[in-house]
Length: 192
Ligand code: ADP
Image (cartoon, rainbow, N blue to C red; front, side):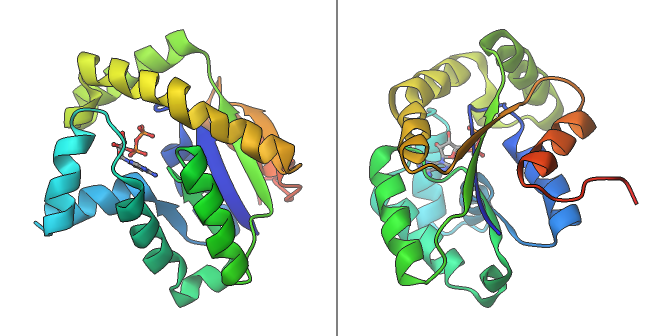
């Protein structure tokens, strides 16, 4: 199964994707993680990206498209994947379609995790304290939310128009949200 996970910053995509990996046994591909790893390695591209990420802006599409294409070309993707953080605008959504078609691996479903704005602000403030991510400080979070509403929210309609979109309520306990996602995927989600 090839899954595109959508949702605002702080909607819980990363948390849910990690749990989905355990249950579904396929790779979690997070562009945020790929970018932060590249920066930690001191890779030139990663360092360039870091200054953009720390402002809450989007890294240029060419960089992201190359990065995601390289990742999607690896053999483990043959079992399906959970894509998190890409696409983040319409151009990326179109590139992804072309890329996946070329690889013979079109997306099966897009899941939009719906969480209300107040909840998101609370969660990101909590994460800033726990993880100390430079892009979780208040001004940057505000910018990330603006970018999300101006650019990323359009991706939801893109998948809706293709008949691939399912909304899942991202409020509540982590385990409950996971169950909702697994139901949306029609996977047997009873705890073994
Ligand atoms: P969140 O979803 O909480 O914003 P991520 O870890 O997914 O966190 O992303 C962190 C940052 O990495 C984004 O704010 C953005 O700067 C950059 N980034 C991640 N994915 C993309 C992408 N597809 N296109 C452009 N920039 C991206």
